[in-house]
Image 1 (cartoon, rainbow, N blue to C red):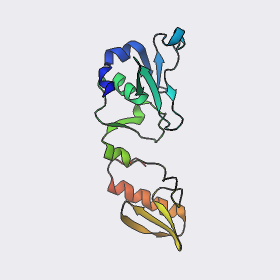
Image 2 (cartoon, rainbow, N blue to C red):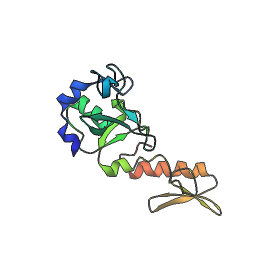
Image 3 (cartoon, rainbow, N blue to C red):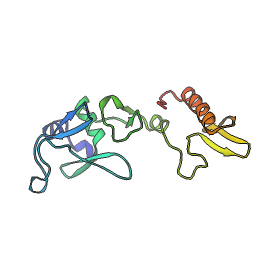
Image 4 (cartoon, helix red, strand yellow):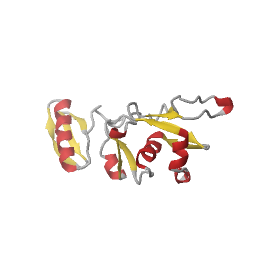
Length: 163
């Protein structure tokens, strides 16, 4: 990985981590004609993904991974999961290093072409069906009741679920 070429010492030379806001703050000015001012918040929010990115030595990195390195002194082994589902919230208490399978258990939104807006719920002619993976949970009168049943089952089935 390209990130492995960036060391803790290099990141520490460039940034201060503000644990209150979850932002990386520049220690030195950088960029063309010093456009990135010392003391300013580093990085930018990607409109489509919702993640913050920062560039170090012309390598574009996810800010939450750089923050993990600054706080823990090593690159994360796996994926970084944002516990509250907000990809821009890089406060260290909101981040955890987890395998991809665990990170996938914390989706907060259904697919854009799903029949219902709530995760784990689909429209049925007699009400709303709740399913967790291939496991049928039940048929419910309201979308919200089906979603609550889905969340309860999801938490029992998946240890790392933070929904």
